[in-house]
Image (cartoon, rainbow, N blue to C red; front, side):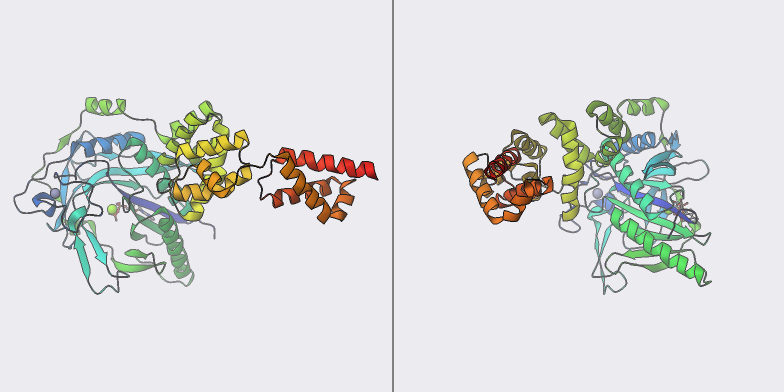
Length: 484
Ligand code: ADP
Ligand code: MG
Ligand code: ZN
């Protein structure tokens, strides 16, 4: 199916500012994960009457930094509103959120993010960036529509959420995934959050096909799932249109287990929320001076870092882009290069081997145990000839899994390269005795020579020093030739 022409996708991305010490309006810890349910709360984040919210200055700074990174306008006046609704995930029956209306704006509006789709660059426009509080976490037993009851955990309630909304400029599930990956990398470079934490980056995806109504898919939890949910939804809508059915504007839920979207409700209209200004928080006045102070603190962002990788380390632009698509990966690469000063070799091993192993294990680099020091040591062992590159590839998964140093794995497994002439000569004797026909052919055919070398390597379990094996096989062939 070709998505390009007739599919519109717009994202509403919610990122928790996990690197802040506290929640958005109170002093409760932002480190709520793994705590006993409903223990990380206070009168403010539970919304007791009379409690007074105080905005977290750090959250405002991160929002401005994000706006600067996404080329947005930083608005001089912004205020918090009450978004009223009745649902168990918000015990005070409203969510405090920035809001765009006459006389008030979200903290940032407009802007764009350029993403690479294959060889093409594509510009995705940003609608707005704003701050709001995270609601409580609802825990269901099995699928949401079959759960006999719902458990509510307020530990998450009041966490600072940064919402980034895009225009419907994305036209395939793949583009949506690339956009999210890049946004995550930018926010990690800014230092706002750790996107690897469960639920730290969640996304509502809006999608319409061929001018049909748009459907909103709520709260998708990972990049992979966004791609899957959108693919499913596009097929569903396309099939309906083909049958002449009408796609209605609605909110759907992505069921990760059954891999389908299910209808939650017809879309509520804006006025249902009865937005009104939060009377307990004064409007924010953001001066150009303040914005400049923050601009001066902006760290290096992924695109600039990729350019630097190309210039400083001489690696291909594509590799630089992949390496900077995750901050942890870019950090890993640079740390490794600091120890083992051959950037191209380091980059090649990360690109074609380490990422492959991580992909196979379904792991992110942060979850794996391999350290830059371990990879650097392995490359050193290969360079010194202690192990072959092939052995390196064999032991890499174990290092990723256990975090052991390569020298230790090599020793435990007896995988050091065999550079002892006598041992290899003995193996060559065996191979010659077992492959009389190949030896015959090898006198005139270089393919047969390579076959013999391959057999020797196989018998040494890839541990034979390739140069030495090559040399000894050829010497041995010379002797056969002379005897004829
Ligand atoms: P809502 O209040 O319903 O969340 P927003 O104005 O916040 O509405 O927009 C939500 C998202 O819907 C935005 O990301 C926007 O890009 C996207 N969107 C708007 N129109 C369409 C459309 N026709 N198809 C797909 N997505 C759309
Ligand atoms: Mg919205
Ligand atoms: Zn609190």
